[in-house]
Image 1: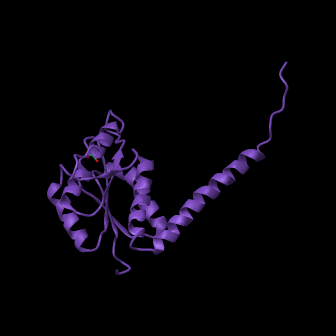
Image 2: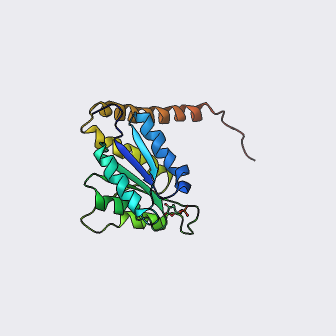
Image 3: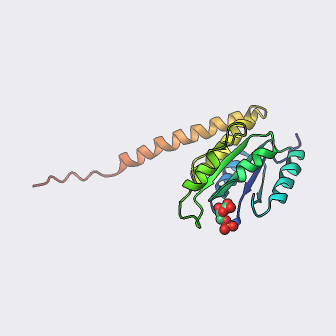
Amino acid sequence: MDAQTSLVLVLMGSDSDYVVMQETGNTLEWFGVKYKMLIASAHKTPVETVEYIRTYEDEGVEVFICGAGMAAHLAGVVASYTLMPVIGVPLDSTVSPLSGIDAMLSTLQMPGGIPVATMAIGKAGAKNAAIFAVQILAKKHSHLQLRLQEYRDKLRNDLIRSQEKISCTPRVTETLG
Ligand code: RP5
C-alpha cells in the first residue's frame, strides 16, 4: 500500500451535512488514517456518486462511510454498488422536522442481502463511523491495533481524571434548619 492511498471514502448527501461529518474526518485523522471526503447525493448526483465509488475503489479505498439526512438512501445505494463494507451515519438534518429519526430508519432498515452498518444519529454516529472503519482496517493494517488500544486507554484515563475533578470540588456542608 502506498502511504498516500486513501483507505476510507467519506460521502455526504449535502454540504449542510459537513458540520456533523467533520467529526468523522477529525477522528480518522486522530488515527492517522488517510481518507477522502466528498459530497455525493443519491438523488441529486446519482451518476457522480457511482463514479466516485468506482474511482476510489480502483485507488484502494477499503471502507465507505456515508452520512445523509431525511430519506437517507445514500448508504444503501453505495452498498448496492460495492462489495466493500459500508457504514451509514443517519444525520439530524437541520431541514428535517423529524430530527434524524427518518434518516435512522432509512439507513438502518436495509432489506436482507445488502447490509449497511448503521451508527447512532448525528455527531456520536459520525465519530463511531470512523472508529468502526479503523476496526475493520486494523485486521489488515495491523499498526492500527495499537492506535485503537491507545484510543481506549485515552477514554479510560479521561474518565478517571474527570472523577478527580469532581472530588476536588469543595463540598457545601451547610446544615439546614
Ligand atoms: C439529504 O437531505 C442530505 O444528506 C441532507 O441531510 C438533507 C438536506 O439536503 P440539502 O437540502 O442541504 O441539499 O439528502
